[in-house]
Each structure stands twice: as structure tokens, then as C-alpha cells.
Image: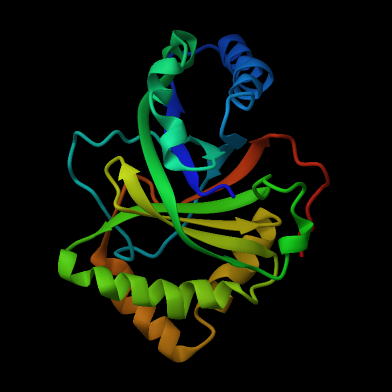
Length: 243
């Protein structure tokens, strides 16, 4: 099982010319990531471009610590058998990777639980993550609230995703390294299906919406979290349904 992920959020350098951007993506997709997947314990890799995620003002709080990097244009996720596979991973990355990036923030998560959605059978391979994801990384404002966060995911948000159209599933993570204590990865067939059904089903029950309205603003998210993103690599095998 793919019980751990390493996620890296980043921006491309502001002064990077288009030709160098193209070279970077070609190197990342055609050389670096395929090479990583030959390492023992590495099961999958996926590279996403983040899109605008409109949330109501005041709904989500973000960390104000200036030491937490703020890159959010792309997210690179690598899945492995367990978290120990990633020991010394950052040091193994060649300098070319970092020369093109800025605002890089890395997080290592181990899986807490997962649920399957109604579109689980559409997965393109045993481990390939969905064409569209929403990934959140956050901390509870107070440690006393941790059990409430656990309860909310089990009985509210993850439960709602079991019958959300277009949802392949949800994976809840806890931190091994990095700023955020919690992580959550939602997978969808397409951005259109995510936008149409995610919040509608999450808030279908009045009591769930009231619970969410109370809990969500109490969390402190990493910069830009939750990120909604579309997969760049591996290429999407089939054009996902839009409705």
C-alpha cells in the first residue's frame, strides 16, 4: 500500500524565461520523476498545477509565520510504501531542480485513513492519483481541538465524499516532517466535477454544514491551502468527464 507521501509546493522563479520553463518541465517529467520511481519503495509520482480556489472571506485562516515558504503554483507529490522511504530524499534532488524554483515548501505525511468514492473504478492505474485533486495542509489552533478535527473528518467530510459524484476517494494524513500537522487529499475525475459537487455534497445535511462552519475557520492552514490542482504528469489517459 502507498501509505506515505512527500508533497512539495513551489512557484517557478519570477525571472525564468519561457524556454527555461519548458526545459525544466521536460527534465522533471521525462527524466527526474521516472528515475525516482525506480527507487525501492517509491510507488507513484504526480505533478500538478494549482488553480484558483475561491473560498468565502474569513472561511480559511492561514499561517502568519514568515518562515513558512509560500510557493503555491505547483504541487509535486510522491507516494511510497512508508515514510521511511523518504529519508535523505531532499538531499538526493539535483541542483537543477531547485534552480528553477522559489518559495518551496515540503511536507512528509503518513496515512491516517482513506475512503473510496463512487468514481474509484475510474483510477487510471493501481496507484495513479486523480486528474484533479484538492490538498489541504493545516494545524489545529489549539491542541485541545484535535479530537474534534478527528471526529469531523470521520463523521462529516470523509463520510460525505463516499457518495459525492466524481470523487475517487479521500486520504487523511498526519505529519512526519514539515510545518503542517494534518493533511488531506481529495481526488476527483475532473475540475468541473469537483467544482459542481464537492461543496454541495459536503454541506448536503444542515447539521454537517453547521459543524463545518464552526470547525473550518478554527484551523490554521499553510499558505494557499487548500490547493485545488490539475494533473500535468503523468498525462491524463482519457479526457475526464465534465458533468
